Length: 176
Image (cartoon, rainbow, N blue to C red):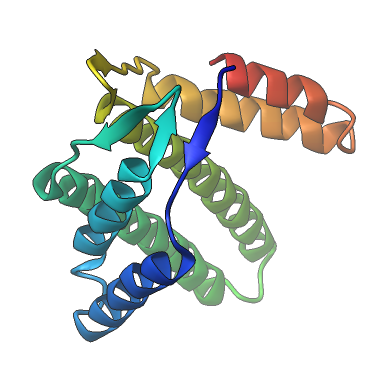
């Protein structure tokens, strides 16, 4: 019988997450990647399939680089939104303010959704490509840009169909 087993303990995971939380707060998020790597190693080491244990070989340097790229993207997004807000205030009494406001809100929303897609894909790639099951090394080859565009397109279609498109959205996302 094929079975996926997890033999972790709740209290152990709580301790790991608590330390991750406290160190993240104290260092203003700088040590979050360290805590996340520690948590992933614990979760994978306690998981097995058909009696063969999973291992997570991710390293702090690579995780930290991805973490900093996400923060850079968020800073750029916030800067873009802030510039749009200042322009609206500058043109406050004109029709141009409404146009600038609408373009800013739409652009920031689309950019945030695109960043979310890239981040989800990058996280999935990092975790899978750093996972082994016994002697088997797992590989994920999905492209972040493609996944970000897929998320934009399918979110738009789900929105204009009032959610009726969402089953197709889920299937397309999983197949990606």
